[in-house]
Length: 117
Image (cartoon, rainbow, N blue to C red; front, side, top):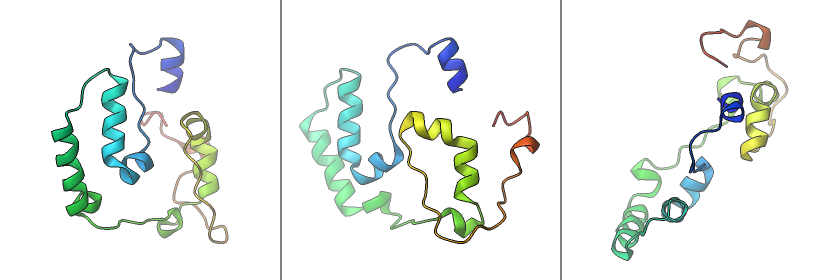
């Protein structure tokens, strides 16, 4: 997708939103989205979103921490595969918290051409 966008850019405007920004400040993320597209966000809507976020943190699902090593996925392998995407969009790699384990991801040369990964 990045290669396609570089070769023939998508129609403007595009807004890139980091998941970590959305979960750390949902209302702020929506405000940035509206500003980016030149839209007005009513104070009533901001107040309603803020109330919802306050009464239902994380969408009401509670904390959902995860780590790659919980699923036997090696962070180095993830970065090896998706490093250019992570760099382009400022997504930091997950720290390697364990000794290297075999990754459940197939080796790079064994990727399916159907997935486009």
